[in-house]
Length: 375
Image (tube, rainbow, N blue to C red):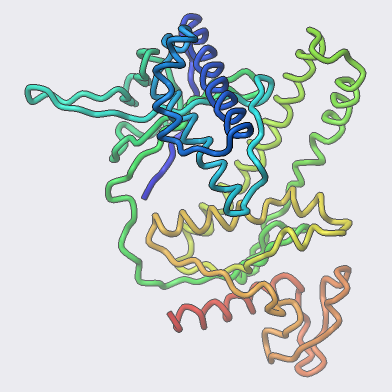
């Protein structure tokens, strides 16, 4: 299993200059060959790499940066074309220097006279990372880890629009996944806007609606930015303030989701949810903003990969399964719940009073139990 560890970087002034140069050179190579492909047609990545030595003679400043990062930018271009040919994305576009900047470099290892060498090393005890051309850079993150049991594959150095530097280290993990547990506890979860997660045990995790906390400030800064002259000093300052607000919104939302997912996985061995079609749900909906803010897909993806690591079971049931319409006590189907305003309803057959969300989560749990025994 591949796993990425994200660290905050604190480079010194000389390292910042070299990192920014590497961003520029990687962007130049990407745009240069994209322009060439537009004019002369697409050529393979390895044919482009053969042209790099002659290009570095013409543009000598390309020699100042890590050569592996230039090759990786061509691999990124190749991936962009593959996605276009497979109709997964639009035609590749040119990179600009005003958005999020990044470059990738591969980890190269070797051995000489019985001693092993690597151009990328992570030291969690001294909080340092060794990178090509940059040397040792201070990092922060993963305070409770002293060593990561895995092989480093590559590193992506990122400069966010907030001005902060990060490095994403991709590991090929050793002994990441545990053996599948013998399931004892099971839970079904219903995802919603009013309550973010409702479990079949009756527990409700409230939706903090993070967007409402930041919406006024974001709107105010966006209006201010629209009035300022593009590229001016004040424009850039406002842009950084706006980026920091978006970053706070994203981190706050992520923190809440991680807490919910960890609690569900600690207490249960089998977790079942609906396979929600978020794109369809947000189409022509007055709840579109709230649905996107809830990040249903993020919750499901996190449950999926964390359950694999912990050796637990996670199932998604059919999105068209009528979990809200069926009474969990007798199986009677009703049309009352078509109205989203109905939070409680009485079953016409067994006369039980059902909470809309808890009833749905119980039905999801039993449907997931069928899937578990089938597999």
